[in-house]
Image (cartoon, rainbow, N blue to C red; front, side, top):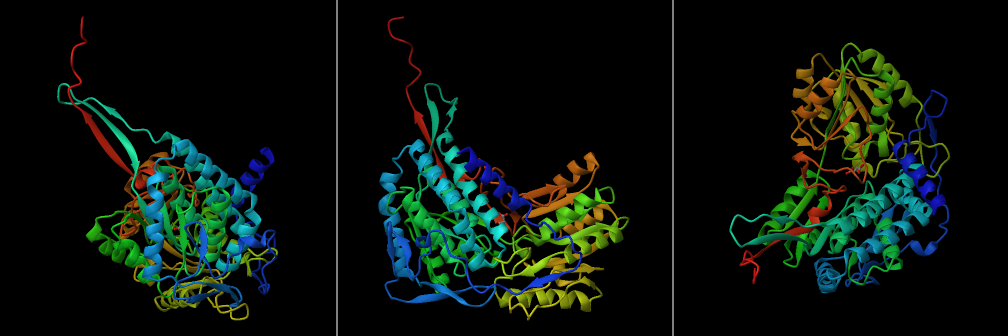
Length: 530
Ligand code: SIN
Protein backbone atom coordinates (compact mmCIF):
# COMPACT_ATOMS: atom_id res chain seq x y z
CA UNK A 1 0.00 0.00 0.00
CA UNK A 2 2.82 2.36 0.94
CA UNK A 3 4.65 1.51 -2.28
CA UNK A 4 1.45 2.07 -4.19
CA UNK A 5 0.97 5.45 -2.51
CA UNK A 6 4.48 6.60 -3.29
CA UNK A 7 4.30 5.47 -6.91
CA UNK A 8 1.06 7.38 -7.22
CA UNK A 9 2.73 10.45 -5.72
CA UNK A 10 5.53 10.15 -8.25
CA UNK A 11 3.12 10.01 -11.18
CA UNK A 12 1.16 12.91 -9.75
CA UNK A 13 4.37 14.92 -9.56
CA UNK A 14 5.21 14.08 -13.13
CA UNK A 15 1.82 15.43 -14.12
CA UNK A 16 2.73 18.76 -12.64
CA UNK A 17 6.23 18.72 -14.02
CA UNK A 18 5.90 17.01 -17.35
CA UNK A 19 8.24 19.31 -19.16
CA UNK A 20 11.66 17.97 -18.31
CA UNK A 21 13.72 19.52 -21.03
CA UNK A 22 16.46 17.65 -22.86
CA UNK A 23 19.90 19.22 -22.32
CA UNK A 24 20.36 20.23 -25.96
CA UNK A 25 19.04 23.63 -26.86
CA UNK A 26 17.81 22.79 -30.33
CA UNK A 27 14.37 21.70 -31.33
CA UNK A 28 14.28 18.01 -32.16
CA UNK A 29 11.68 15.86 -33.77
CA UNK A 30 10.86 12.17 -33.58
CA UNK A 31 8.90 10.32 -36.24
CA UNK A 32 5.85 8.85 -34.49
CA UNK A 33 6.04 5.20 -33.54
CA UNK A 34 3.44 3.26 -35.49
CA UNK A 35 1.66 1.16 -32.90
CA UNK A 36 0.55 1.10 -29.27
CA UNK A 37 2.78 -0.88 -26.90
CA UNK A 38 0.75 -3.95 -25.84
CA UNK A 39 -1.53 -3.52 -22.82
CA UNK A 40 -0.74 -5.60 -19.74
CA UNK A 41 -4.48 -6.26 -19.57
CA UNK A 42 -5.86 -6.31 -23.14
CA UNK A 43 -9.42 -6.66 -21.82
CA UNK A 44 -9.32 -2.94 -20.97
CA UNK A 45 -9.55 -2.14 -24.67
CA UNK A 46 -13.26 -2.36 -25.55
CA UNK A 47 -14.30 -2.05 -29.17
CA UNK A 48 -17.74 -1.61 -30.71
CA UNK A 49 -19.52 -1.49 -27.39
CA UNK A 50 -20.74 1.03 -24.85
CA UNK A 51 -21.48 0.30 -21.18
CA UNK A 52 -25.18 0.34 -20.26
CA UNK A 53 -26.82 -1.30 -17.26
CA UNK A 54 -23.62 -3.11 -16.37
CA UNK A 55 -23.40 -4.74 -19.82
CA UNK A 56 -21.51 -4.11 -23.02
CA UNK A 57 -24.02 -2.85 -25.56
CA UNK A 58 -24.02 -2.01 -29.26
CA UNK A 59 -26.06 0.77 -30.87
CA UNK A 60 -29.51 -0.52 -31.87
CA UNK A 61 -28.91 0.71 -35.41
CA UNK A 62 -25.68 -1.29 -35.55
CA UNK A 63 -23.87 1.90 -36.64
CA UNK A 64 -20.32 2.56 -35.51
CA UNK A 65 -17.74 5.30 -35.95
CA UNK A 66 -13.99 5.15 -36.37
CA UNK A 67 -11.41 6.52 -33.98
CA UNK A 68 -7.96 7.44 -35.31
CA UNK A 69 -4.56 7.89 -33.70
CA UNK A 70 -3.81 11.64 -33.97
CA UNK A 71 -0.07 10.93 -34.35
CA UNK A 72 -0.27 8.57 -37.30
CA UNK A 73 -3.83 8.92 -38.59
CA UNK A 74 -4.15 5.14 -38.31
CA UNK A 75 -7.38 3.49 -37.26
CA UNK A 76 -7.48 2.60 -33.56
CA UNK A 77 -10.89 0.96 -33.55
CA UNK A 78 -14.62 1.53 -33.80
CA UNK A 79 -17.31 2.54 -31.31
CA UNK A 80 -21.10 2.41 -31.33
CA UNK A 81 -22.86 5.46 -32.79
CA UNK A 82 -25.59 5.95 -30.19
CA UNK A 83 -28.72 7.87 -31.15
CA UNK A 84 -31.66 9.31 -29.21
CA UNK A 85 -33.32 5.93 -28.66
CA UNK A 86 -30.08 4.39 -27.34
CA UNK A 87 -29.54 7.40 -25.09
CA UNK A 88 -33.12 7.28 -23.77
CA UNK A 89 -32.54 3.63 -22.95
CA UNK A 90 -29.37 4.48 -21.00
CA UNK A 91 -31.26 7.25 -19.18
CA UNK A 92 -34.06 4.78 -18.29
CA UNK A 93 -31.42 2.40 -16.94
CA UNK A 94 -29.87 5.12 -14.77
CA UNK A 95 -33.34 6.18 -13.59
CA UNK A 96 -34.19 2.58 -12.62
CA UNK A 97 -30.95 2.25 -10.66
CA UNK A 98 -31.39 5.54 -8.80
CA UNK A 99 -33.98 4.61 -6.11
CA UNK A 100 -31.84 1.84 -4.64
CA UNK A 101 -28.49 3.56 -5.19
CA UNK A 102 -29.60 6.67 -3.32
CA UNK A 103 -30.34 4.41 -0.34
CA UNK A 104 -26.75 3.18 -0.09
CA UNK A 105 -24.85 4.75 2.76
CA UNK A 106 -22.25 7.38 2.09
CA UNK A 107 -19.67 5.00 3.55
CA UNK A 108 -20.64 2.28 1.02
CA UNK A 109 -20.29 4.75 -1.84
CA UNK A 110 -16.96 5.95 -0.45
CA UNK A 111 -15.65 2.38 -0.50
CA UNK A 112 -16.78 1.84 -4.09
CA UNK A 113 -15.07 5.04 -5.22
CA UNK A 114 -11.91 4.18 -3.33
CA UNK A 115 -11.81 0.76 -4.96
CA UNK A 116 -12.28 2.36 -8.37
CA UNK A 117 -9.44 4.78 -7.55
CA UNK A 118 -7.17 1.86 -6.63
CA UNK A 119 -8.04 -0.03 -9.78
CA UNK A 120 -7.16 3.02 -11.84
CA UNK A 121 -3.78 3.30 -10.13
CA UNK A 122 -3.17 -0.46 -10.47
CA UNK A 123 -3.82 -0.08 -14.21
CA UNK A 124 -2.12 3.29 -14.58
CA UNK A 125 0.27 2.10 -17.27
CA UNK A 126 -2.47 0.65 -19.47
CA UNK A 127 -4.80 3.60 -19.04
CA UNK A 128 -1.92 5.92 -19.95
CA UNK A 129 -1.19 3.90 -23.11
CA UNK A 130 -4.83 4.25 -24.15
CA UNK A 131 -4.76 8.02 -23.49
CA UNK A 132 -1.60 8.47 -25.54
CA UNK A 133 -3.02 6.33 -28.33
CA UNK A 134 -6.24 8.25 -28.79
CA UNK A 135 -5.26 11.72 -27.54
CA UNK A 136 -1.60 11.90 -28.57
CA UNK A 137 -0.11 13.33 -25.37
CA UNK A 138 3.29 11.90 -24.34
CA UNK A 139 3.15 8.79 -22.17
CA UNK A 140 4.64 10.53 -19.09
CA UNK A 141 1.93 13.19 -19.27
CA UNK A 142 -0.71 10.50 -19.80
CA UNK A 143 0.48 8.67 -16.67
CA UNK A 144 0.23 11.94 -14.80
CA UNK A 145 -3.28 12.40 -16.12
CA UNK A 146 -4.30 8.97 -14.82
CA UNK A 147 -3.05 9.90 -11.33
CA UNK A 148 -4.85 13.26 -11.55
CA UNK A 149 -8.03 11.55 -12.77
CA UNK A 150 -7.92 8.85 -10.09
CA UNK A 151 -7.34 11.64 -7.56
CA UNK A 152 -10.94 12.79 -8.10
CA UNK A 153 -12.23 9.36 -7.05
CA UNK A 154 -9.95 9.39 -4.03
CA UNK A 155 -10.97 12.93 -3.10
CA UNK A 156 -14.71 12.28 -3.44
CA UNK A 157 -14.46 8.94 -1.63
CA UNK A 158 -13.31 11.08 1.30
CA UNK A 159 -15.98 13.75 0.77
CA UNK A 160 -18.92 11.32 0.51
CA UNK A 161 -19.23 10.64 4.27
CA UNK A 162 -18.91 14.33 5.07
CA UNK A 163 -22.07 15.50 3.28
CA UNK A 164 -23.42 17.10 6.42
CA UNK A 165 -26.64 19.08 6.64
CA UNK A 166 -27.29 21.92 9.11
CA UNK A 167 -29.40 22.52 12.18
CA UNK A 168 -30.75 26.05 11.87
CA UNK A 169 -32.23 28.22 14.68
CA UNK A 170 -35.79 28.94 13.47
CA UNK A 171 -37.42 32.39 13.53
CA UNK A 172 -40.80 30.95 14.45
CA UNK A 173 -41.31 29.82 18.06
CA UNK A 174 -41.76 26.07 18.36
CA UNK A 175 -40.28 25.30 14.95
CA UNK A 176 -37.08 23.36 14.46
CA UNK A 177 -35.29 23.55 11.10
CA UNK A 178 -32.70 21.23 9.64
CA UNK A 179 -31.37 20.38 6.21
CA UNK A 180 -30.54 17.12 4.45
CA UNK A 181 -28.22 16.82 1.45
CA UNK A 182 -29.89 14.59 -1.15
CA UNK A 183 -28.65 13.37 -4.54
CA UNK A 184 -30.12 15.40 -7.39
CA UNK A 185 -30.98 12.28 -9.44
CA UNK A 186 -29.90 11.05 -12.86
CA UNK A 187 -27.02 13.11 -14.26
CA UNK A 188 -26.02 13.57 -17.90
CA UNK A 189 -22.27 14.15 -18.21
CA UNK A 190 -20.67 15.37 -21.41
CA UNK A 191 -16.89 15.37 -21.54
CA UNK A 192 -14.13 16.53 -23.93
CA UNK A 193 -11.16 14.77 -25.54
CA UNK A 194 -8.30 16.81 -24.04
CA UNK A 195 -8.25 14.86 -20.75
CA UNK A 196 -9.89 11.54 -21.68
CA UNK A 197 -9.69 10.25 -18.09
CA UNK A 198 -9.70 13.30 -15.82
CA UNK A 199 -12.71 15.12 -17.24
CA UNK A 200 -14.96 12.11 -16.78
CA UNK A 201 -13.74 11.20 -13.26
CA UNK A 202 -14.07 14.83 -12.17
CA UNK A 203 -17.80 14.55 -12.93
CA UNK A 204 -18.54 10.92 -12.02
CA UNK A 205 -16.65 11.12 -8.68
CA UNK A 206 -18.90 13.70 -7.00
CA UNK A 207 -22.03 12.30 -8.66
CA UNK A 208 -21.45 8.84 -7.17
CA UNK A 209 -20.35 10.29 -3.83
CA UNK A 210 -23.65 12.19 -3.66
CA UNK A 211 -25.71 9.08 -4.55
CA UNK A 212 -26.60 10.01 -8.15
CA UNK A 213 -26.62 7.71 -11.16
CA UNK A 214 -25.07 8.84 -14.44
CA UNK A 215 -25.12 8.62 -18.21
CA UNK A 216 -21.71 9.82 -19.38
CA UNK A 217 -21.24 10.67 -23.06
CA UNK A 218 -17.62 9.96 -23.91
CA UNK A 219 -15.75 12.19 -26.38
CA UNK A 220 -15.99 11.03 -30.01
CA UNK A 221 -12.23 11.46 -30.47
CA UNK A 222 -11.20 9.60 -27.29
CA UNK A 223 -13.84 7.06 -26.22
CA UNK A 224 -11.57 4.12 -25.35
CA UNK A 225 -10.21 5.54 -22.09
CA UNK A 226 -13.79 6.10 -20.83
CA UNK A 227 -14.69 2.52 -21.74
CA UNK A 228 -11.66 1.19 -19.85
CA UNK A 229 -12.85 3.23 -16.86
CA UNK A 230 -16.29 1.63 -17.23
CA UNK A 231 -14.66 -1.81 -17.15
CA UNK A 232 -12.91 -0.80 -13.92
CA UNK A 233 -16.24 0.48 -12.50
CA UNK A 234 -17.60 -3.01 -13.06
CA UNK A 235 -14.63 -4.55 -11.26
CA UNK A 236 -15.01 -2.02 -8.43
CA UNK A 237 -18.51 -3.37 -7.80
CA UNK A 238 -20.44 -0.26 -8.82
CA UNK A 239 -24.03 -1.58 -9.10
CA UNK A 240 -25.58 -2.14 -12.54
CA UNK A 241 -27.10 0.94 -14.10
CA UNK A 242 -25.36 3.41 -11.79
CA UNK A 243 -22.61 4.29 -14.27
CA UNK A 244 -23.46 4.18 -17.97
CA UNK A 245 -20.89 5.22 -20.58
CA UNK A 246 -22.19 5.88 -24.09
CA UNK A 247 -20.54 7.02 -27.32
CA UNK A 248 -21.36 8.97 -30.47
CA UNK A 249 -19.53 11.02 -33.06
CA UNK A 250 -21.83 12.26 -35.81
CA UNK A 251 -24.84 11.88 -33.47
CA UNK A 252 -23.20 13.93 -30.71
CA UNK A 253 -25.73 16.77 -31.02
CA UNK A 254 -28.66 14.29 -30.99
CA UNK A 255 -27.30 12.57 -27.86
CA UNK A 256 -26.69 15.94 -26.19
CA UNK A 257 -30.26 16.96 -26.91
CA UNK A 258 -31.62 13.67 -25.57
CA UNK A 259 -29.74 14.25 -22.29
CA UNK A 260 -30.68 17.92 -21.94
CA UNK A 261 -34.35 17.55 -22.86
CA UNK A 262 -35.12 14.41 -20.85
CA UNK A 263 -37.39 14.99 -17.87
CA UNK A 264 -35.66 12.12 -16.09
CA UNK A 265 -32.22 13.72 -16.23
CA UNK A 266 -32.09 16.24 -13.38
CA UNK A 267 -28.59 17.56 -13.89
CA UNK A 268 -26.22 18.10 -16.80
CA UNK A 269 -22.52 18.79 -16.41
CA UNK A 270 -20.64 19.78 -19.55
CA UNK A 271 -17.04 20.65 -20.35
CA UNK A 272 -16.48 22.10 -23.80
CA UNK A 273 -16.92 25.23 -25.88
CA UNK A 274 -18.95 28.28 -24.90
CA UNK A 275 -21.03 27.96 -28.09
CA UNK A 276 -22.12 24.40 -27.30
CA UNK A 277 -22.66 25.37 -23.64
CA UNK A 278 -25.15 28.06 -24.69
CA UNK A 279 -27.03 25.56 -26.84
CA UNK A 280 -27.18 22.93 -24.09
CA UNK A 281 -28.43 25.56 -21.64
CA UNK A 282 -31.26 26.50 -23.99
CA UNK A 283 -32.14 22.84 -24.47
CA UNK A 284 -32.19 22.34 -20.68
CA UNK A 285 -34.55 25.27 -20.06
CA UNK A 286 -37.84 23.39 -20.52
CA UNK A 287 -36.95 20.87 -17.84
CA UNK A 288 -35.20 23.43 -15.58
CA UNK A 289 -32.19 21.26 -14.96
CA UNK A 290 -29.41 21.89 -12.52
CA UNK A 291 -26.38 22.71 -14.69
CA UNK A 292 -22.65 23.13 -14.36
CA UNK A 293 -20.64 24.22 -17.35
CA UNK A 294 -16.88 24.50 -17.71
CA UNK A 295 -16.47 26.35 -20.98
CA UNK A 296 -13.81 28.08 -23.03
CA UNK A 297 -10.95 30.10 -21.59
CA UNK A 298 -8.49 32.67 -22.90
CA UNK A 299 -6.18 32.85 -19.91
CA UNK A 300 -4.15 36.00 -19.28
CA UNK A 301 -0.65 35.24 -18.00
CA UNK A 302 1.05 38.34 -16.58
CA UNK A 303 4.70 38.76 -15.67
CA UNK A 304 5.52 41.94 -13.73
CA UNK A 305 9.00 43.48 -13.69
CA UNK A 306 9.38 42.44 -10.04
CA UNK A 307 8.81 38.72 -10.77
CA UNK A 308 11.44 36.02 -10.33
CA UNK A 309 12.38 35.48 -13.98
CA UNK A 310 13.19 31.76 -13.74
CA UNK A 311 9.97 30.97 -11.89
CA UNK A 312 7.95 33.02 -14.37
CA UNK A 313 9.56 31.31 -17.37
CA UNK A 314 8.99 27.84 -15.88
CA UNK A 315 5.40 28.79 -15.07
CA UNK A 316 4.77 30.04 -18.60
CA UNK A 317 6.25 26.89 -20.15
CA UNK A 318 4.09 24.68 -17.95
CA UNK A 319 0.90 26.66 -18.38
CA UNK A 320 1.21 27.38 -22.10
CA UNK A 321 2.54 24.07 -23.41
CA UNK A 322 0.84 21.50 -21.17
CA UNK A 323 -0.91 19.04 -23.51
CA UNK A 324 0.54 21.05 -26.42
CA UNK A 325 -1.59 24.02 -25.44
CA UNK A 326 -4.83 22.05 -25.54
CA UNK A 327 -6.32 22.82 -22.13
CA UNK A 328 -9.00 25.35 -21.23
CA UNK A 329 -6.66 26.90 -18.66
CA UNK A 330 -3.56 27.21 -20.85
CA UNK A 331 -1.98 30.66 -20.89
CA UNK A 332 -3.28 32.28 -24.07
CA UNK A 333 -2.30 35.95 -23.77
CA UNK A 334 1.13 36.27 -22.19
CA UNK A 335 1.62 39.85 -20.97
CA UNK A 336 5.18 40.82 -20.06
CA UNK A 337 6.05 44.17 -18.44
CA UNK A 338 8.45 46.23 -20.52
CA UNK A 339 11.37 46.19 -18.08
CA UNK A 340 11.65 42.40 -18.21
CA UNK A 341 10.24 41.76 -21.71
CA UNK A 342 13.45 41.07 -23.66
CA UNK A 343 15.04 38.92 -20.95
CA UNK A 344 11.84 36.93 -20.54
CA UNK A 345 11.39 36.45 -24.29
CA UNK A 346 14.89 35.10 -24.81
CA UNK A 347 14.88 32.77 -21.75
CA UNK A 348 11.41 31.49 -22.68
CA UNK A 349 12.37 30.95 -26.34
CA UNK A 350 15.47 28.94 -25.31
CA UNK A 351 13.29 26.57 -23.29
CA UNK A 352 10.85 26.11 -26.15
CA UNK A 353 13.71 25.30 -28.52
CA UNK A 354 14.50 22.38 -26.21
CA UNK A 355 11.18 20.64 -26.78
CA UNK A 356 11.11 17.36 -28.67
CA UNK A 357 7.97 16.96 -30.76
CA UNK A 358 6.81 13.52 -31.88
CA UNK A 359 4.67 10.47 -31.22
CA UNK A 360 3.62 10.14 -27.59
CA UNK A 361 5.18 6.71 -27.05
CA UNK A 362 8.63 7.75 -28.20
CA UNK A 363 11.51 8.22 -25.79
CA UNK A 364 12.24 11.79 -24.84
CA UNK A 365 9.23 13.26 -26.64
CA UNK A 366 7.93 16.22 -24.65
CA UNK A 367 5.10 17.30 -26.94
CA UNK A 368 2.73 15.29 -29.11
CA UNK A 369 0.38 16.12 -31.97
CA UNK A 370 -2.77 18.22 -31.85
CA UNK A 371 -6.03 16.33 -31.87
CA UNK A 372 -7.02 16.86 -35.52
CA UNK A 373 -6.41 18.96 -38.62
CA UNK A 374 -9.05 21.54 -37.65
CA UNK A 375 -6.91 22.35 -34.62
CA UNK A 376 -3.88 22.78 -36.88
CA UNK A 377 -5.84 25.10 -39.17
CA UNK A 378 -6.80 27.35 -36.23
CA UNK A 379 -3.29 27.46 -34.79
CA UNK A 380 -1.81 28.24 -38.20
CA UNK A 381 -4.39 31.00 -38.74
CA UNK A 382 -3.47 32.64 -35.41
CA UNK A 383 0.23 32.60 -36.27
CA UNK A 384 -0.28 33.99 -39.78
CA UNK A 385 -2.65 36.67 -38.45
CA UNK A 386 -0.11 37.76 -35.82
CA UNK A 387 2.64 37.92 -38.47
CA UNK A 388 0.48 40.02 -40.78
CA UNK A 389 -0.21 42.48 -37.94
CA UNK A 390 3.43 42.99 -36.99
CA UNK A 391 4.27 40.04 -34.71
CA UNK A 392 7.69 38.37 -35.03
CA UNK A 393 7.95 34.58 -34.88
CA UNK A 394 11.13 33.85 -32.91
CA UNK A 395 10.63 30.08 -32.51
CA UNK A 396 8.67 27.63 -34.68
CA UNK A 397 5.64 28.97 -36.51
CA UNK A 398 5.04 26.14 -38.95
CA UNK A 399 3.19 22.89 -39.54
CA UNK A 400 5.36 19.75 -39.39
CA UNK A 401 4.21 17.66 -42.37
CA UNK A 402 7.18 15.31 -42.07
CA UNK A 403 5.80 14.10 -38.74
CA UNK A 404 2.16 14.00 -39.82
CA UNK A 405 -0.82 16.22 -40.52
CA UNK A 406 -1.53 16.99 -36.86
CA UNK A 407 1.84 18.33 -35.77
CA UNK A 408 2.68 22.01 -35.29
CA UNK A 409 5.95 23.51 -34.09
CA UNK A 410 5.90 24.93 -30.56
CA UNK A 411 5.87 28.63 -31.39
CA UNK A 412 6.87 31.89 -29.72
CA UNK A 413 5.82 35.25 -31.16
CA UNK A 414 6.98 38.64 -29.87
CA UNK A 415 5.53 42.09 -30.52
CA UNK A 416 1.93 40.99 -30.03
CA UNK A 417 -0.89 43.55 -29.90
CA UNK A 418 -4.54 43.53 -28.95
CA UNK A 419 -5.76 43.68 -32.59
CA UNK A 420 -4.52 40.18 -33.25
CA UNK A 421 -6.87 37.18 -33.26
CA UNK A 422 -4.93 35.54 -30.46
CA UNK A 423 -5.82 38.46 -28.15
CA UNK A 424 -9.50 37.66 -28.20
CA UNK A 425 -9.74 33.96 -29.21
CA UNK A 426 -8.54 30.82 -27.47
CA UNK A 427 -5.81 29.28 -29.66
CA UNK A 428 -5.92 25.79 -28.07
CA UNK A 429 -2.51 24.97 -29.44
CA UNK A 430 1.24 25.40 -28.89
CA UNK A 431 1.54 29.11 -29.70
CA UNK A 432 2.84 31.59 -27.15
CA UNK A 433 2.22 35.22 -28.05
CA UNK A 434 4.11 37.74 -25.87
CA UNK A 435 2.31 41.08 -25.37
CA UNK A 436 4.27 44.01 -23.86
CA UNK A 437 2.63 46.25 -21.24
CA UNK A 438 3.62 49.24 -19.08
CA UNK A 439 1.39 49.55 -16.02
CA UNK A 440 -0.56 47.31 -13.66
CA UNK A 441 -3.83 49.09 -14.45
CA UNK A 442 -3.27 48.73 -18.20
CA UNK A 443 -2.56 44.99 -17.97
CA UNK A 444 -5.48 44.24 -15.65
CA UNK A 445 -7.79 46.08 -18.07
CA UNK A 446 -6.39 44.07 -21.01
CA UNK A 447 -6.70 40.82 -19.05
CA UNK A 448 -10.31 41.59 -18.14
CA UNK A 449 -11.27 42.66 -21.66
CA UNK A 450 -12.03 39.01 -22.55
CA UNK A 451 -15.63 37.79 -22.61
CA UNK A 452 -14.49 34.62 -20.86
CA UNK A 453 -12.93 34.23 -17.41
CA UNK A 454 -11.68 30.76 -16.54
CA UNK A 455 -8.06 30.93 -15.30
CA UNK A 456 -5.62 33.80 -14.96
CA UNK A 457 -1.99 33.82 -13.82
CA UNK A 458 0.48 36.42 -12.70
CA UNK A 459 4.01 36.59 -11.34
CA UNK A 460 5.22 39.16 -8.82
CA UNK A 461 7.25 39.32 -5.60
CA UNK A 462 5.25 42.25 -4.22
CA UNK A 463 2.82 40.90 -1.63
CA UNK A 464 0.41 43.82 -1.86
CA UNK A 465 0.32 43.51 -5.62
CA UNK A 466 -0.35 39.78 -5.25
CA UNK A 467 -3.51 40.47 -3.26
CA UNK A 468 -4.57 43.40 -5.41
CA UNK A 469 -4.22 41.70 -8.79
CA UNK A 470 -5.63 38.34 -7.58
CA UNK A 471 -8.74 40.25 -6.50
CA UNK A 472 -8.91 42.36 -9.68
CA UNK A 473 -8.74 39.57 -12.25
CA UNK A 474 -12.16 38.57 -13.59
CA UNK A 475 -11.53 34.82 -13.63
CA UNK A 476 -12.78 31.88 -11.59
CA UNK A 477 -9.22 30.73 -10.82
CA UNK A 478 -5.94 32.58 -10.31
CA UNK A 479 -2.43 31.15 -10.23
CA UNK A 480 0.03 33.45 -8.43
CA UNK A 481 3.69 32.58 -9.09
CA UNK A 482 2.67 29.22 -10.54
CA UNK A 483 1.46 28.05 -13.92
CA UNK A 484 -0.11 24.84 -12.65
CA UNK A 485 -3.31 25.09 -10.64
CA UNK A 486 -5.11 21.79 -11.30
CA UNK A 487 -5.74 19.82 -8.14
CA UNK A 488 -8.69 17.61 -7.08
CA UNK A 489 -8.72 19.56 -3.79
CA UNK A 490 -9.14 22.97 -5.50
CA UNK A 491 -12.43 24.31 -6.94
CA UNK A 492 -12.19 24.42 -10.74
CA UNK A 493 -14.53 26.67 -12.73
CA UNK A 494 -15.06 30.01 -14.39
CA UNK A 495 -17.00 33.25 -14.56
CA UNK A 496 -18.48 35.23 -17.47
CA UNK A 497 -18.70 33.14 -20.68
CA UNK A 498 -16.46 30.45 -19.14
CA UNK A 499 -19.53 29.09 -17.38
CA UNK A 500 -20.55 28.35 -13.81
CA UNK A 501 -20.38 25.65 -11.20
CA UNK A 502 -17.27 24.23 -9.57
CA UNK A 503 -15.63 20.83 -10.01
CA UNK A 504 -13.34 19.10 -7.55
CA UNK A 505 -12.87 20.32 -3.95
CA UNK A 506 -15.46 20.41 -1.19
CA UNK A 507 -17.64 22.57 -3.46
CA UNK A 508 -17.75 19.99 -6.25
CA UNK A 509 -20.21 17.69 -4.53
CA UNK A 510 -22.91 20.31 -3.97
CA UNK A 511 -23.30 20.49 -7.77
CA UNK A 512 -24.82 17.00 -7.53
CA UNK A 513 -26.94 17.58 -4.42
CA UNK A 514 -30.08 19.37 -3.41
CA UNK A 515 -30.40 20.92 0.02
CA UNK A 516 -33.71 19.76 1.42
CA UNK A 517 -35.07 21.76 4.33
CA UNK A 518 -37.23 20.14 7.00
CA UNK A 519 -39.23 22.19 9.50
CA UNK A 520 -40.60 20.39 12.56
CA UNK A 521 -43.49 22.31 14.09
CA UNK A 522 -44.77 22.25 17.67
CA UNK A 523 -41.38 21.44 19.11
CA UNK A 524 -41.19 24.15 21.74
CA UNK A 525 -43.46 22.56 24.41
CA UNK A 526 -42.30 22.71 28.03
CA UNK A 527 -41.18 19.40 29.52
CA UNK A 528 -44.14 17.62 31.14
CA UNK A 529 -44.32 17.20 34.90
CA UNK A 530 -41.75 19.85 35.74
C1 SIN B 1 -9.59 21.58 -19.07
O1 SIN B 1 -8.82 21.82 -19.98
O2 SIN B 1 -10.79 21.82 -19.19
C2 SIN B 1 -9.14 20.97 -17.78
C3 SIN B 1 -7.76 21.25 -17.40
C4 SIN B 1 -7.39 20.72 -16.03
O3 SIN B 1 -8.18 20.09 -15.35
O4 SIN B 1 -6.27 20.96 -15.62
